[in-house]
Length: 588
Image (cartoon, rainbow, N blue to C red; front, top):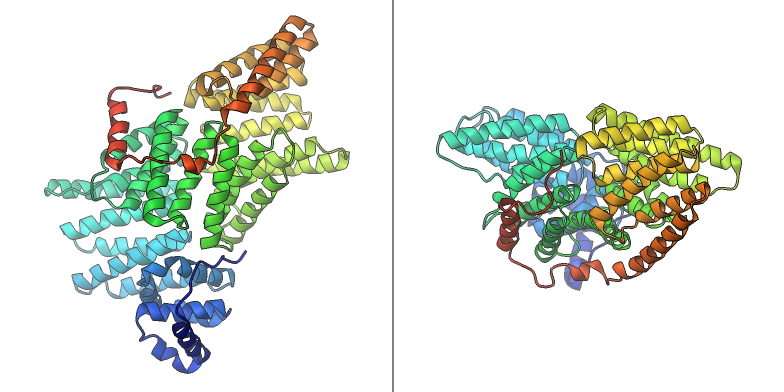
């Protein structure tokens, strides 16, 4: 999908002049490069609008030209349009620029310090753009070149630059799922922090700790992520860049969600959404970042309908800014696919969810290697959807084909997760649980039981006995025992355990309770306990009435900080709750 054009309506006379320059591009190419950056950019944008991508690519692939274009910072969204169009067209402008910058850094290794400092500053801008655009591998190459320049001088200024470079490098390595290298980057940043401290200097650690929190969260090390998000919040001070504040709030909110500290998570993510909207605007990629994390919060507090709407808004923004085959668009498609799958689980209408899952996979496989970890979650989501479609299918041959495709996708996801995280990890456990459900649908009941038990054991050891993820796996095993293996005593015990966890975490109106209640009604019918059948029919009716009332709320975005607190108040409120030991204690 081509990027949607943002509003760009220059004055008529000016626009006519730009068009005239473009019409004579061949003769005026050299003169164009001497124009002020804003005018020069407008000429290039006109080339993009006219579809003259080969000529535009020839310009953007020259480092000096692109450096000047980057200085037109108020037109960054339009630059993303042009850049993505070139990448989609097959012009490898990201790698060309990264390689050119790397060569330049090699040439100036023996130059004066101020020459290197200028190159480092440009590298931060170039790498930052490539990172924002989702070309993490090329951004990584740029930042590594910057870091190499920083190491050539053992001075305070270069230690500061090295820390900043490490933060940026850690961000792109997180985005590209290079978690082992990310850990090394964090340790290197710490070593420079220690050098600064020994010489009486301090660098703010908010961004660094926030990125570490993101790394630990991605690896499902939730306790550690939670602890480091607290340290990052302590580092938020007046004058810190808004982008850093927003990113720390986002990561802290996600860490709170997985620790089931929902009140804290809500306050943090709503403030992040508010800050991003007020500072960057409602069409900016940073605003879409906060919306994806807001959708994550809403999904986890069981406000599924609103999460779908928020994810759709985030996707719309990313498509309008990037369009095309872009990793940021792919991740938004995946998030929307999963929330749509959950939302439509009862109805069985999965067309929309399947579309977004397939779109995510198509984009990722186009721009990343086939064994990239980002494919694990997208394949998992598609497999879940295919399984449900197969179950509702009345054609035996089609059902078997869909289940086999789901099986292949789940196995591929499992192998990617085990390669990245090992056996003893929440992500790996999720894939075991997904395979357990699939084997049940394939009527391979012993294999299903084995997978569910394995998932439960890993989750219990990592998350504790009463976590949401444990409840999911316990409920799935109960379903297997109830519907297919006639182990009713075990099923009843597991259903009741799943219900207790769900009610404790989310309350009486939790959506997942429906499947446990229906399972118990079927179970008690099977064993002839009609008193219990009647009891749970009444419980289910009360649950339905509660669900009807629970989320009769207007647009979730209208609820975001209508009376916003100052950032300092949000931070202090969060830290105060930690010092008082408020909320649910961390699980093991």
